[in-house]
Image (cartoon, rainbow over all chains, first blue to last red; front, side):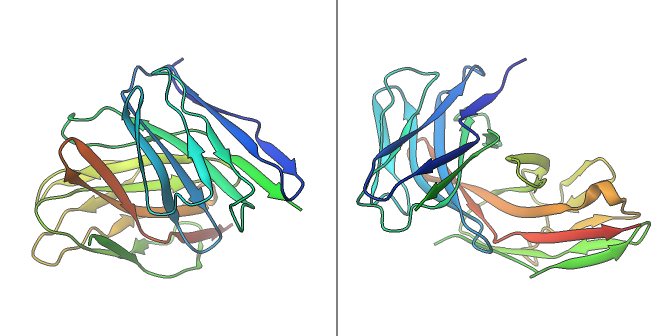
Length: 114
Length: 115
């Protein structure tokens, strides 16, 4: 079955450590996205990538970094510069230019930093 | 910029009650509109969509009509079930330049259905 996988489901880190969240898709989608979800705030866009080797900052990119070396993979690194990293992180993908532009989401990774 | 406003929750209903979750939007041009659902501890699933004015999206008994004159996309279901308990997000998709299409989400509405 095609879909998006995120691992791990739960992640715990100490303050000051960088941590990388995995996102893999086998939908053959060109575009991939990272969102952050906090209680009562909906989803906020961190980074997105329309094609391999290219990505753009979203609304809250500070303290995060990404890479897009393969079409299937879009890992997100939460750096020690991110002031409040504890959150639920969602990865998504889509096919640009389909006319409806809906995005398909992975199951998410809950990151807790103490 | 674009924005989506949903009714604040939480919404608590009894099984078989009628559901309405209001959603209005602000956008230039002609966005596509979506409702996503999120069950506890999971990612978002696309529930339904509409791509132009007067389109009605429907799925699993849920419906929403794209009303350009009132810039609204209200979600409705005639008879809710306990299994419908979840957070519902209204969203719009707009060309943000070139081939970039960005989803803008509302803050979500928590629905709890009691037996």
